[in-house]
Amino acid sequence: MAETWTLRDAFIEELRDAYDAEMQLTKILPKMAKAATSPGLRALFEKHLDETRGQLVRLEQVFESLSERARGKHCDGIAGIIDEGKAVLQGNLDKVTRDACLIAGGKRVEHYEMAVYATLVSWARAMSFNEVADFLQQTLDEERAADLALTALAEHGINQGAADAAYPEPDTEAEIEVPVSRGNKASKRRSAAARVS
Ligand code: FE
Ligand code: ZN
Ligand code: FE
Figure 1 (cartoon, rainbow, N blue to C red):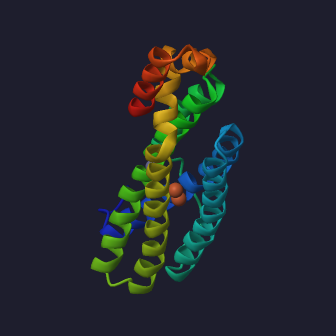
Figure 2 (cartoon, rainbow, N blue to C red):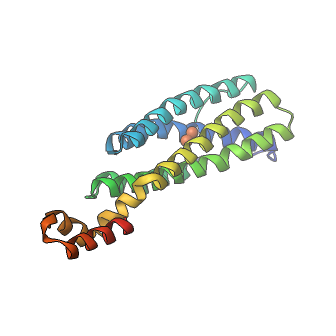
Figure 3 (cartoon, rainbow, N blue to C red):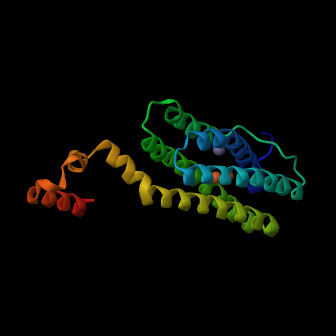
């Protein structure tokens, strides 16, 4: 490196890193969508794939407005997160556990991206690249929304479903087979099970 880097140089470098990261994500998101069992989770990954393609276009516009060529530079961070997630795609997991793990991997991705774009927005504002900052803010908002949507799916059923698969309640299944005519003892146990669930 001949000259000392300025924040502008670092900014362009981070944009290239982000561009490559989004590129990598357009390849893995279809696989995550396909691996998801929950229709809501599948739809979320598909929606975020569309958004990710839009984020690439947005980055191209950012490069253009800075008179820089749009090109990526290999993002090791996202590559590492994707690599860790591959165990989930290839492993022998029950369906709801796979969904819970897909969410865990998805949240790693979104948080990584949120950190990247929050910095890029802040640097763009500091350098008075206001239009660029607004563009990158839109992407940051999408990453945040994706993260929140993943959390909502996890908290509204998927994590509990996975926990129930890990710790099935033996009583619950046995109860179903107990005829009602056997009276008090069975119905008492049934209502106890109902209270728990
Ligand atoms: Fe993204
Ligand atoms: Zn990176
Ligand atoms: Fe994202």
